[in-house]
Amino acid sequence: MNPKRILVVGAGHVGLYAALRLSKKLSSREAEVVVVDPQPHMTYQPFLPEAAAGNISPRHSVVPLRRELRRCKVVAGAVTRIDHDRKTAVVQPISGPTREIQYDHVVVAPGSVSRTLPIPGLHEHGIGFKTIGEAIYLRNHVLDRLDVAAATPDPAVRRSALTFTFVGGGYAGIEALAEMEDMARDALRYYPELKPEDMRWVLVEATQRVLPEVDRDMGAYTVQQLLKRNMDIRLDTRLESCVDGVVKLSDGDTFRSDTIVWTAGVKPSPMLDATDFPRDERRRVTCLPTLQIVDGDRVVEGAWSAGDCAAVPDLTKEPGNYCSPSAQHAVRQAARMADNIANVIRGREPVNYKHKHAGSVASLGLHKGVAQVYGVKMKGWPAWAMHRTYHMSRIPSFNRKVRVVVDWSLAFFLKREVVALGQLHDPREEFAEASQPVGAGRRV
Image (tube, rainbow, N blue to C red):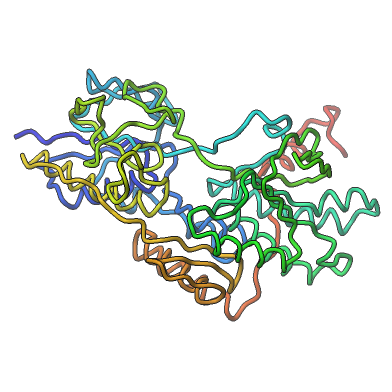
């Protein structure tokens, strides 16, 4: 029998875990697994706040694909079109002409991107918080603003530099806000020109609560803890404009802010627009509980999806409910999907995915957190420890687990690194200026 080719589109939580499991369950005689992603790594997104705050090395929050997927074929590129009727995907490698890849089964897992709104100024001045590059940029930017504030004699420039605005009160927004404030407060010990009360940290949330994944009392506790740290929490408030860095809110307040972080939700990857798969009203790929793509009542043979980009029925709830776009579901869906693909290749029936959401954990900075797991609620240090323990157990590979634990262990004995490496974002600027011919703008 010729081996089946399984094409995995995207190497995020779903893609990596599914490819890894498939490569272990199926022999080379049964299947060839091909993974396509433009990035050489999977980003473990729950660790982005800690990487941005300097609690762990940014390199330790990503998982190298080629190291982990040694039994898979990894293609560095982007899938630009899928024609499932022909079972063909068009791939644009990071260099060179496009190529077509034929497949027998396809795992559609491009994930999600930031869900933005047409707010004036957001495109020019906002920054997301979904990639390791954005996390590193935000860290360097916040520390750079401290340098600006310490150096300037202009009070208006200082206020703008020390005003940090985060839009979105979900887990990403709350953790990013809390970790960055914690880091900046630590850094101020080296800035005698600045005081903690000079900083203004603003959270803008359009609904009346934060952390909608947990009970209201836990969300209220989170707000109380942030208020104790003198943060400005604006609930039931929308960002209406940020043109030229001037933040205008729906409650009528206006202020300048050099830092505007957008964490107000996600939407399925626009890559899905270049496929012929059925979508729901939220542009997610429609799926059965088996993770097979379904078009009405017809199963799309050989097509599978899971994670943020998929509408997967949640069998633990009433009909009409779907699994939330969380890493917890994505990892488990990936395992069930891989097992189902193996079942189908071996002539067996696929099994439904069913998992009751275990709960959520969130860090509110060093030694601070909130957690609700299987109905048990924890606050403060125990919740923070639960957060670290859970995510350390979930990041793929023993190599990464050890590196993360070493980072955390060193942090108990050494002070946090609070140096900005802003030149990372434009590394050729100094060389380009030095290499200009005399007379072409070069300073001598």
